[in-house]
Amino acid sequence: MEEKEELLSAIESHQEGEKNLSFTLMLWMMILLLGSVVLLAPKIYIRSNIYYASKNILQLQNQSDSLIEENKHLKKQLEDTKFKFLIMDIGF
Image (cartoon, rainbow, N blue to C red):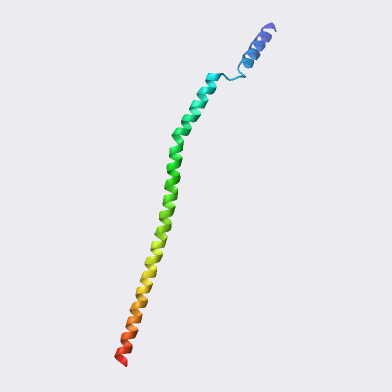
């Protein structure tokens, strides 16, 4: 029974000593945290810029497609109008 109490008291004293973090451990944690931020911040920044650039490219591509279709439509209208005036000149 006495051995159990000694073992229990040794464990408790060991646990009490570990409750406080040492300065060097805190310093290493801060260095690791700062290092991870330094390594990951550029990656996040670059990915964000790529996302917004691709979003702008997609918007410009959609506008380009729309303008190409509108140009085709206007060319067809111009040809129809030219044909109509040609028929009117020949007929009258």
